[in-house]
Length: 342
Image (cartoon, rainbow, N blue to C red; front, side, top):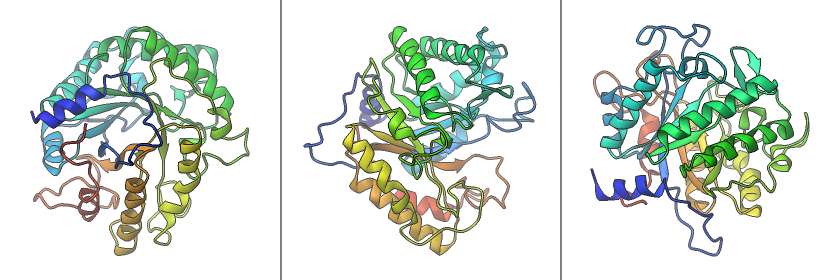
């Protein structure tokens, strides 16, 4: 394993304070891709591994390690990993996650474990007391298992239908439980309202994430606010095409200013664009903006790779079967963290 990769993995386990804003700006240091599949066919609980859902294969991890990424985000369904609320973890499912983490580490990659549940468990909202208790219990168990490993804790993918202040109270409990295990791993803290960067400071529908998370405290001092930002017409990542060349930059401006004002870090855990020239130019400008604001943007993971995406999925950066590189990956390559990033 490269010495620089070892430094990166070690840094994830440190009690890393927010860099001084007076320090020289640097580019985001954790840069990679989502490798989707573990969250597929969520209605099938638990479903059949290899038929309904899949985790990153060694060949997938190796391909992106060769491309120069240093982190992969791995979505999974809560119900598969923990079949009963506040119950034991599935031995079989956790073994699969262990395999991904081990293979990634051997390649010099860190892993984000992403609970890809949109603020629900089997259709029940996390604001229900039993479900909130269950999320606390899930992360207590995962933290005990993965503390000290090159693993980042992604608390919840895109919580929706939740008032930001209510979500903040649940996050406080989860983070406290993680730190009580002695885990010092980096924690990614999403907001409510699909955790959109473009809407982070926007008031309405129960308040803003900016107001709810002002003054947020992690006892371990090693967290970043997780945000997502797509470049299509409504920031959902479900439509073809992109806005003008500054669409991504404009949608990140307010969140970037907020991060700097509260002396916090952000992590852009999902963003994606189509493969046409207009989208590629828009993607390039957004990544350049993140580079210029590396004092607050600590990293990013593009959505998405994964071997089960159909050929029609225009956001995919999964290498083609003939080994060809996707157009978006050529743009991403220009903005990956340098190999000596730590």
